[in-house]
Amino acid sequence: MAFALHILAVGRARAGPERALFEAYAKRLRWPLRLQEVEVRPARPPARQKQEETAKLLSLVPEGAGVVALDQGGKMLASETFAETLRRFREGGGPLCFLIGGAEGLGEKALGRADSVLSLGSATWPHLLVRGLLIEQLYRAQQILNGHPYHRGGR
Image (cartoon, rainbow, N blue to C red; front, side):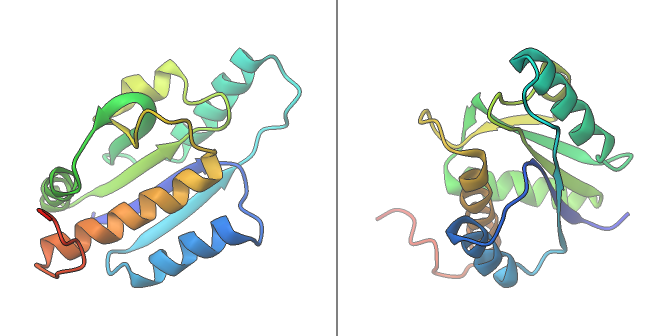
């Protein structure tokens, strides 16, 4: 399998600034990218909601894919370190999936399946905004790996 990025996310992004932000950076990305969204009807107990969303996300992970779970308890990486991590996954040649949970977060099965658990900071972000933050960091990593001055690191 060739390297490709998959963003597997809970919730559907409707027209609006969050979707526009995601699309603006997705157009700049040179790596193949696929966004898949899942929805689970709300109004269940939160633990069950999280479990069902996690199961749906994991069902979309291609066989042999690397998995990065986005979770507030994950590791925070500098952009350069994130780029290096992507480089290593890319050299592995298979797809790389990023899992974005819903309002309740990701279940233990997703965190256990993940090759890496990544945090975008200690603040709580709306899951639709996390897509924009992630895609910008993917674009930034691409630019860092290409030696492009977009990043302006070390200032």
